[in-house]
Length: 398
Image 1 (cartoon, rainbow, N blue to C red):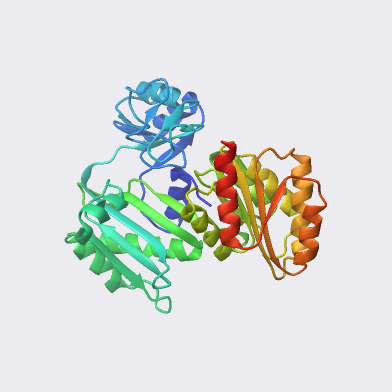
Image 2 (cartoon, rainbow, N blue to C red):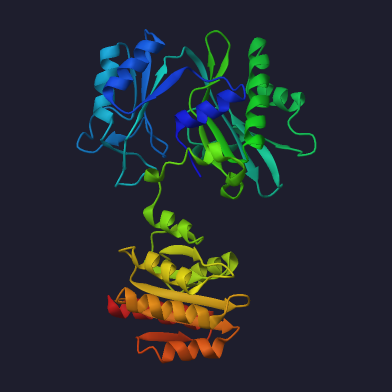
């Protein structure tokens, strides 16, 4: 689960992470009040959407205008800029061409920026440890830095037994070229950020840019946080920060049925049980010359109702031109999958080619259910056969 910048800063501040003062506003009038409460002489008006690149983004209908992050020097400008942003659609390199509608803005006090740095905490799967990533190239996308100047990225894996220690923080501070009181400020910042990360079961915290002010303070000028969905039951306050308007409707619907669904850009919908098998299914679709439209894992104990819901979610994507169902029945019985597929196909009036590969528990019964359905369902003997058939069927139907 992801949250907005202002929410991330509010959470981090509770742990002692230094952030500029600010307030959220849903109307131009609220923005004006926040600006008056903060005092001047400089304010920053920030569009709040779940996407990066807001400053370089542009609003639909005003592609040549200012971006989604603006520095202003009067309360009247705060109000007018908030009015331009709220209700408008902001397009950035992370939103795609469709963009995202801005429903709120964050009004923040101005900052005397001396240097811009990069800092993040994430879980490194290679080391199975929380890892600090830092760079002197603040304000840039870390992927661009990694590609162009990888030597400018510092990484330190933290032993979970000891947690972050002072020497970790000092090592990072020195590597970033900080001096004197800046080091003390950075150490305090890093220790607080690590505690926030671990206590809140975060999956990622990114501060870009992390700035050094003219007074030598180290503060988070921007902040992004993502959380482990499986741990949200321990953090009701964090779960309440969820903004469903920022999430894909199909993924939200999948969550209601405990389905693991991620929308992709291809044309062949996939319904599979097991994450590994789902990845293999997507790979073999690409091998046979097409692209998967989604990742969808129905799990090992899906019911007929969940399978039907999964089928509907796949078909809700207008880019889907064919569906491949690939089930290896262990705990999940093939006849249950077959019943769900038949029920869903009848309910939504199936209009695209459908190939089903079943193997495992009750496979013969499952195949019989499909054969007796009267629906145009193509059976496959194995995964390669299934991929070849669905790719061919989609091309012939085009």
